[in-house]
Image (cartoon, rainbow over all chains, first blue to last red; front, side, top):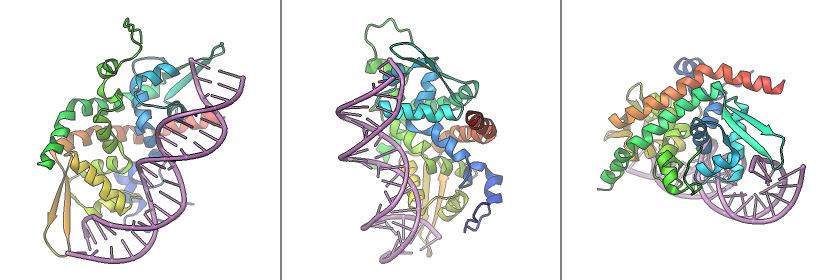
Length: 131
Length: 131
DNA sequence: CGGAATCCAAGATGATACTG
DNA sequence: CAGTATCATCTTGGATTCCG
């Protein structure tokens, strides 16, 4: 039911190496959500515990309401985030990680930590290229 | 979450939690390159060893020449990838990871592996939402 | 073969205004 | 407070063409 791809390498070859290498694998979508600019940062912040919408927005520098809401919805749809809406006025909504979410978030944070920790080495590469 | 600091959230607060949370931190750019759709996959493939341009293109399903070249250049600029151009006809260019590149690639692959391994659990979340 | 350059469609993002 | 709706903009991504 899938259209053949006009590439030398077969789909089987791609899958053997890893599902992510296959063009139309759903894992690409999950990867997209998880590694999205605001999705990643949301996961990392939520690893510290439950947060309200405005708290997340404050902690994640530069994110707009729209993008934050959009990112959170995508991650909620993937089962990474639990959204708990309290029926009060004014509205009170709490976001937290599901057990599944904690697992990805840990992976994501490790990558984030590596970058923060090794940023100087990367910047050094840029400097040397300029020289 | 419960800071005794009177200020809601300063840049200092952001940096204390992590440079990635700060809007204008260069780490955001590095993160962008590393987690970009084709950048991630390139790093993972190169973890298997040196590859030529066309080899990378073949292994990474669905990538265009333009985007692959662009992604590789960004990662080369960050010092993650080494580009070796052999002066022959027809051209022969080899891409490999630098020691720094190997380190990020490992982090990236771990995230990728997790997603591939737990894809079924994620898809299950989607199913339950539909029900 | 390994790109660079160009054009264009599509999607991501942001500011603003509005609502329950 | 926690969003949604809308519009304008900016960036991505792909297809095509050309070159050393």
